[in-house]
Length: 562
Image (cartoon, rainbow, N blue to C red; front, side, top):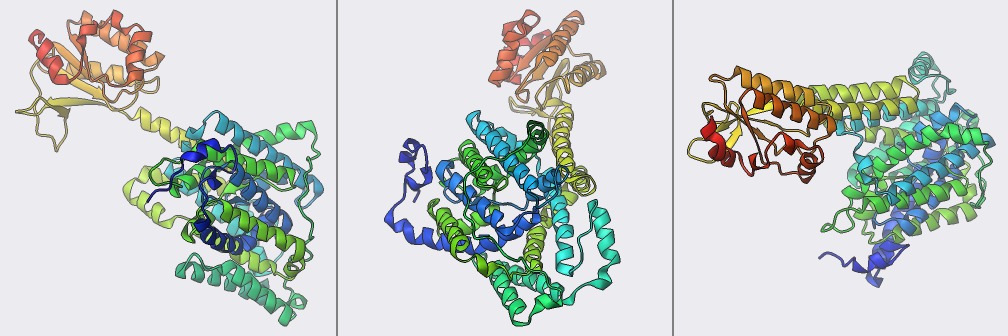
């Protein structure tokens, strides 16, 4: 039975706790414990992926969990350091400062504050539609490219080799040339953790395979003195707790960060929307995407204040909370509390964690985000969109990663524009024995009527396709034998008409009138299209009584003129 969420509208903060009941506590505690077991190794690994010390990943997780619990709407969503956005902003920050330096961290804090501010603005201005900027093929290609970046960045640690500088493909070539220098101990640790995490996931997502792998690898390092055999470890993890502070960044640096901040914010919006729609708080109600933007934005703002980097919604961790019985954001707060306790009292436990083990965790993350089944389905069902997958992945792999992501977004928008411009004029035929006019085609049993042409555009009419529509309609009239005396435009697909399109319609109506062809419009259903007819004065060239509710009505009223 659906839970009653009515009181939540009265809660400005901690909305997901408004419906909390004592019976929810066991589920939230179990979810929090499981989430912490999954998040601890993942957040450490993601921090290292971005060029930060492990505790910065913990800061990000605590900030993301608290910020989202305070202002988000979804009861399950887990927010924190994320391997999808980390390679993107790490690549951008590396162009401005050396990873691991105080300047690098200050820039990351500033970036987090900017991303958080953009997310909050996106929530206030209800910009949830931005989440639709990336089409599925572009998203799949984007994740495949990110996966390659993660794999290449972690191979040196797993192989026990020095990490080369340069573009991704260059790094891969250098590593291939030094493969014979692989440290067998780091290789066994990295692949062992990868196998353990993958096996645990296959059995049950609730099994904290990453944590078990890290513990086992750490014990092996200590027991067999593997540090003396070339196995690198995390080292001393400061037991410092996050304290609020503002980054010291020159004004011109803020300006340089703006484009990267917008890029990261768009990716966070897309992933947050996808996550919250996949794990609905209430199956009977739509996701409150705009409110969840506010929660994710608050998480990044807190992360920036506490010395960390931008945070993002995590689909896998959110799934863990949902599957383990979490009922409110209390589960995320419990996990954040456990991480805080680890920092305060158990940071020394982390110093012997081998880098290769963290690499093994990230290798699993990288392999998991490649959507092989979707790639295969797109290849078989839409080859042109498969090329979008390949192009997006190639751009992210070959170009600097933040430029590659920008190219991916541009490709998605161009794909949308191209799809709209492909909206072609279709001719309608009459289905015998009915009042139905249907688009002609090999599976349509219909017939045209002499002297009557019925055409339609199954797309919004805009500057992108208006000229093509105008020309195609005139061509259809000219190709008909005998020449039609009545033209009916079936307008159910024209949900939008812009200025350029209105001018083309104005010219079309006038040209048809001069050619002694009567024009009617049927099924002008969209309120925006109806408003366009009024605003653009189309009724000056098309009488109002020539607009009908159906094609059949138009034919019966004006067909005698044919």
